[in-house]
Structures are given as structure tokens and as C-alpha cells.
Length: 114
Length: 114
Image 1: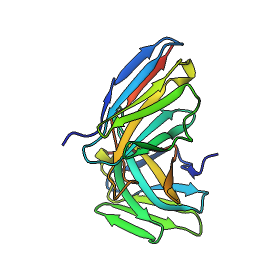
Image 2: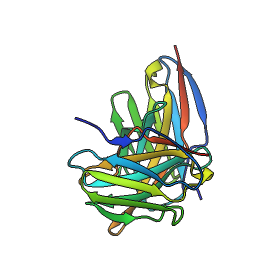
Image 3: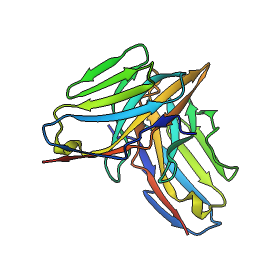
Image 4: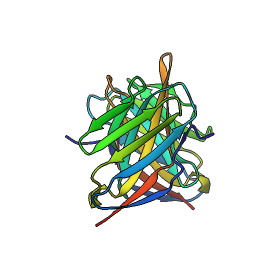
């Protein structure tokens, strides 16, 4: 079984550019999570979806960040415009309906904003 | 406001000995706790969990203990193996009606020496 798939694995961009991170959750999982990991703040939950509907987006840092889940097999996290302080590793995770706490993480996208 | 704290950034243990990783939390609403293991350049991997109605859960070499009165949980690895060398994250979940909040600690890097 394929795990959670994220793309790209690495992204280098310049300040002000739009960045789009992509995630394909494990098939059959109802929950999808976006996390950000930085040295200063550790692993933070940005937003999570249940059956494609955003449930809690209180962790989204600013209006520059937006996330969508148009269908059960795809989600995007967009940063527009990007800033150097957005540099981090972004993880996507998914979990099944009966065990939302047990999350399966993707390999992450390492983002560097210059 | 860190609601889940791992105060030891690193731990070094000899192969065959016990590794004890600690985690403290502040939110009494947390009802589910998990440990994840993370290797470099990979996403966190679920290791073991415990519900707040229990005080111990065991899975092979891994045991998690929960002390609710002290708001403290620990992960015991016995015996420790070099392949256990990784960063270990403590995580907690709280239910608020129809949505949950998820928090992660900052991680403890375990080094098991051969």
C-alpha cells in the first residue's frame, strides 16, 4: 500500500512567489492534516479536514496561507505571497475514520524561501 | 503556549539498556496520547498510544505509562537497539464536541550506542 504522498519533496523559491504543496492521503482515510515543523516551534498543526471539509484551521498562521481539499484523494496547501519565515518542513498526514488520532505522515516538503 | 513539553532534547543509552523518554502536558482535556518516531528526511511514524482511561499500554519492547495526576507520560524501550536511534515525539489530543485539537512536543533525540 502506498503511504501518504507529498510533492514536491523540496522547494526553493523567492520571497513574494506563490508556493503550492500537494498531498495525496492514504486511500480510504477520512482525515487529512497539514503540519509545519520548524526549529523554533516544533511540529504545529495548521489545519485538518474530515471528509474533505475543513474542521479546524486555527493553526493557519496568516491569510497568506490557504488549504483546499477538492476531493478525497488530493489536498493543497498554498502560500501566497511567501516570506522567508515560511521556510520549514511541511507534513501532510491522514488517518482513518475510527482512529483519527493515529496519523500516518508523508515524507514532508522542505520549503526554503529566499 | 506549549501544551505538550519534552524537556530533554536528547538522550544517549547503551544498547540493551532501557530508554526512558518523558513528556509533560498542561491541558487536562487531553484524552489520548501518542508517541511517534522520526528518522531524518522522513515523516513521523506512529509508535504506540494510550487512552486517558488507562495508565499503561505495552507493545513488544515499547511501553507507555500515563500518570494523569502528574500530567506526565513516559515511553520505555526495553531493550534498546541501535535501530531505535531517532527523534521521538510525544503527542496529545483533546476532544471538543465535534472537533479535536492535536499537539506535539518538540521531540527527544535518542541515540542508542552499540
